Length: 233
Image 1 (cartoon, rainbow, N blue to C red):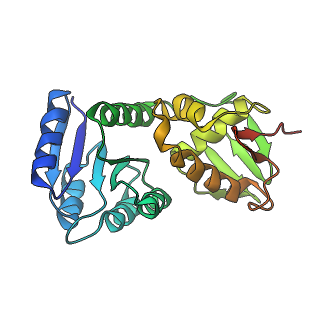
Image 2: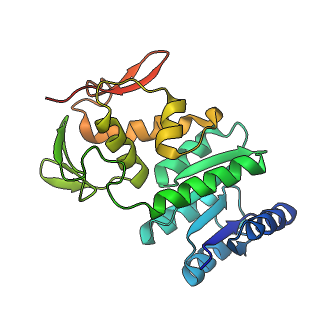
């Protein structure tokens, strides 16, 4: 059965073009032209992925993301205008899975969609170092098999990609990775221009595992190179 993508875009020509291409790629497509309609279609059609423009009438894309995240973990790929860095970060912080910047290439968009859908189908713990292990990382305890992060005995909410990133770094403790390498190995694509995605997810993880997220000692930045998860005792 074809996977369903909800395309939310108020520019009619762009929305129709995206729908046409996605259908050509084998997806079932549902369309919405504004934020209110997006919520209606999401609830009625239960899509496998939402392609969401942030600049929408009725309800903004950020508000749509906020509402959907209260009800579902469906992957959300946001579309943002070039230079709208704040919108990108806000969208990710609200729970969007990734973003592409307009104007974007169709090839890039297709790669992002395939990558997100592959991750959503992957078995829990597939990226983990040893999916049977429970590991201590900084102030947190990581249950790879259960796909849980606990702090002070309390289960903390963690976004799926952030957990995947942490599991990957656990498997490669002490090894420094560039943002581009992490995009390729964790996110599954090789477009180097949108590395802010990695930074936002590192920020989330530090808030959970570090004693002082502003002065990280576990998940460190290696200036000019990337990130490293220091070896844990």
